[in-house]
Image: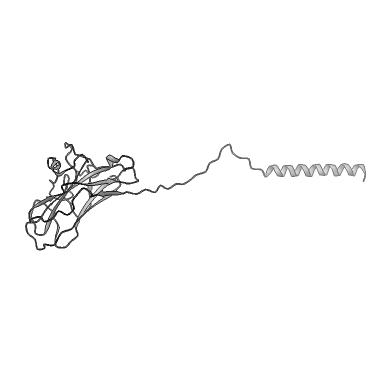
Length: 224
């Protein structure tokens, strides 16, 4: 091989090496100074309400027609939601046949049971104390502002939302509780609890003497 041929081969190798290096640099991706990723987490939450009836006598016994009966001790309602705040609704129904709930407690109807419910804070512990507080068991029709009459349709409990004030005492009373946006027990135990009191007045006449089962349903949901 002549000297000239050696020089040409060496120059060719240098050219191919430069080309390979150039192609290699062109294929390199340079990273940014920062980058990010997004993680998705879906909270699992639910509304939950517990009614403790350990202190209340649920069998109110035999009551004369036109007579009234009360729960002497209260049921304790406690919010156990995993949402931050809970509102309550309440509804009632007569499970046994023959009677209905009275839609107007100012009138007397055959086979129509008058029923009221009122919530207080837990400082009120007996019916005698409740009897001295204004706003308890004074409503005449369910769903009206200021009423505590139980009906078959769910009605909001408390002082906000639609503007109705239902199933609570008057604000001047020591046992008054707004019953709105209640915290969960795990965050604020005392604030999550309330006492539920019930009153019933029997109709003046009846066609059915079988024992009457009245179901009271308290449901938790989103604040208004």
